[in-house]
Length: 133
Image 1 (cartoon, rainbow, N blue to C red):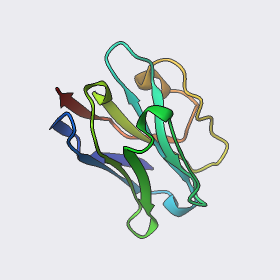
Image 2: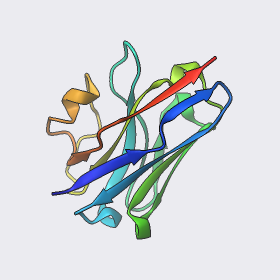
Image 3: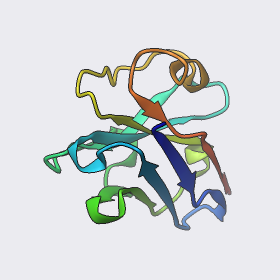
Image 4: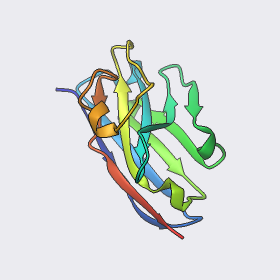
């Protein structure tokens, strides 16, 4: 079936950079809205950035000017370039896809619960990003 596989997480110093990738298979990536969520310690699941099939983007205020979301439809891959990292960016990052285009990006609660629910069609397994000061 359809799935998403993330890569690129790891550790960085504050001020550093990381790039996350999320490769899709078994669904038409180009026709899908895709994005990144994160959940840090003690926090709820938060939509970080998303990019629609028409290439319109959204980013939460705390990452604007630092993170950039992009997609390569030929490679069926979603990216999140994270620059000027801060300790508060420490979180598990999940990619997600809405290929039925009837999804709900307004996730509440834990990302792990959202992955099992009906918000969106597909979620990755999550990748940990740790930023040290």
